Image (cartoon, rainbow, N blue to C red; front, side, top):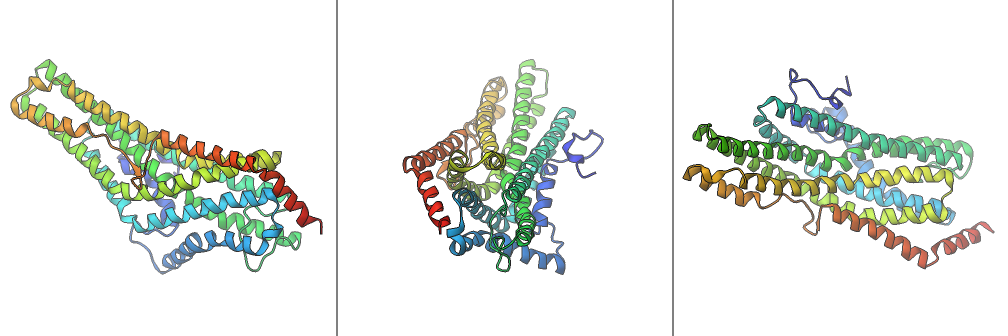
Length: 407
């Protein structure tokens, strides 16, 4: 059953945290990233085709199309094409980054395997299963939103007698007749749609891995709280309590190793996303308010949802992890460590110092990935719209369009 992992599995079935990214890794595997070292000749040929299209042809097809047919672009179609052009450049950057750091995703999953070892109680195992189901549902939400965007853009294009994405194909010109319009529309739907399918993975992998990390941080906090309860009761064996403390330290060390593994991938890709996202949202606002008609706005809304999914969930989880790390330090401080022997107190104090350094993620060491940064990106979009309105961009583009059409 393909959608089996979107439902929490019973305790009788083996489930690991790495199962939260099964759908994601399968998508990347289809795109040509060899996670399992099982590529034959046919798959290697497909890999060359996929890489060539995603990295070179698709990003370059938009500038080529502007160079050849720029005078034939009406304002709304130009803005719609431009927002997709910027997104494809960002998509290519993320795809190349994942291709370079493919091994790090498997290294991150090995960190998850180590963290699963510390999940021994039935409650912790249920929480792992619930997290796996929730994260897989989140990934499917990406897929549904992206599919809605791809399909609504196709329908809107056919309704307005134009192609959905306006990419360049050397032997097809949809402007010549209706037959070529239909041919290019469906060729674009399947080729660009393939890139959109891959983008569900390149856009969602940070939040998928970070959400799984947060699950283990919350369980670590509960273990530290139980340490305090055992210390207050005074009935537990001191060696047993110290062993539990050491296991908490090892789990936290594994979490830091996970962060060191995943940071280089997230840092570059989310930096590109932050830079592009504000510009894309600004162009979308200009198009929606000034040029788009009612039928086109549904496709624009689904596109905005897709763009927001690229940054907001990750910023939310990164923000939550900082708060959770502060709770970890508070939980250890209130765990009655001072009632234990010298060995325990010394170890607990060193652990407390480490916990006071929250886990954070940055974009190229320039932007901290949190909700405040996400809000600033949205503010930048409003700035782009305000500049365009102040320049009377709608009147200038419409005047240029009418001038082109009048001859």
